[in-house]
Structure formats: C-alpha cells, structure tokens
Amino acid sequence: MGLAVFFGCTFIAYGPAFALFILTVAVDPLRIIILVAGSFFWLVSVLLGSLVWFVGVQLSDRGNPSLQSGMLVFGAAVSVLLQEAFRFANYKLLKKADQGLASISEDGRSPISLQQMAYVSGLAFGLISGAFSGVNILTDSLGPGIVGIHGDSPHFFITSAFLTMALVLLHTFWGVIFFDACERGKWLAGMGVVVSHLVTSALTFLCPWYETSLVPIYLLTAGTAAWAFSTAGGSVRTLQRCITCKQKIDDRVVVYSALQAPSED
Image: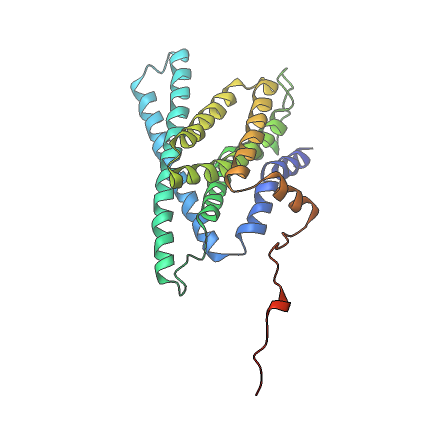
C-alpha cells in the first residue's frame, strides 16, 4: 500500500512539471542553462529565508508556543518576499544575458525570447520548490505507519501531492507575469504576483482543513493561469486553434496576374 501511495502521489505532484520539462525545456540546451540558473536563485532565496527564521527562533522565547507559531508565519512571509526579490534579480540577469546573446548573433537577434526565458525561469522556481516541499512527505509515505490511525485525516499524502502540483504550476505562471511586468513597467501586476504568492503561502497554514486550503489555492491557480495566458499573448481564438490543432492561415493575398515576367528580345 505504501509503494502505491508513493508512486501515485509522485505522479500527481511532479507529472505535469516533468511533462513540461521534457516537451519544452529538455530539447534546448540554452533553456536547460536558464532552468539551472533559476533553480540556483530559488535555492539562495530559501537559504536566506531559513537563516532569518533560524535567527529569529534563537532570539525569541522557545518555550512560548504561540510566539513560535508567529515566528513560523513570519519566516514564511520573509521567504516569499525573498523568493520574489530573487525572481527580480533573475530577470535582471537574464535581461543582460539576452542583450549579450543578441550582440553576438549573426542577425542581431537573441536565440530565445524574453517570454520563453520567463516561462523556463518560472518552471525552474516551481520544480525546485516542489522538490523541496514534497520529497520528505513522499519518503514518509513509504511507511511504516498508516496516516489517520489516530483520528487524523487519511488524505494527507494525496492532498500534499495536489498542493505541490499547484505550487509548481503557480510558480510557472508567476514567472511569466512577473517578467512581463518588469519588462513593461507594470508594477501593479508585479505586486499582484507578490500578493498572490503571500496569499497562497498563508492558505497552507489552514491545514489539516484541506477543503479550506486546497480549493482556494486551485481557484487561484486557475485564475493565475488565465492571467499568464493572456500576458503571453493568448486569446480565445488561439486557444481554439490549439485545441483543434489548426495553424494560423496567412490572410495576405498575392495577385499573381499582376506579376509580369520580363519580355525577351
């Protein structure tokens, strides 16, 4: 039973992210480099956030449970803010790299667009975040022991898997929106990413009331997905063409009768 739970939750949590990586990132070496760079930025942000939380815990009264709960909330908020700060730093680095790639190319154009960089960077944040948040839980799912034997909810592992999947997708969408906001100076959109990240982090504290936390998070994921799709230039028409596998038809018409071949003497 433990092995079945392990593989089931693993496929739920990381299946979509793995598919996105294989289909859209693994085929391009440049995208893999951007993915590794984004993962490094996320790791540094979490390291600093953990350091702030650790120092706060050591300086506070460790025998006060309510204070320690408050320190946990404080640490989560600081971690979210640091993640978004390092997302901005990643944007600045990739922007410089994009200019450098364009300067050395033959046609003066970068081999990868800023939107593609935003997507890969967001996926990097999501993959490494999902790995850190879900690996320990998946290890515990192998046993020994049964969740819920003492009256707790038996849906802990499956809920954690769906939550991890949502966080991976949210980071991907946040990356697309945040990079576009930085590029076009839409600071309200950038603040919207930060606020939605804070709200998502706050909703995770509602566990073990899983319906209260998971349902709003997935509603937020759906809304953020639509926002990112629109930001990337998507529309209802492009979505219909994608579903029906139809390519855009060029509406330009060339009147060949107006073209005359040069006369031969």
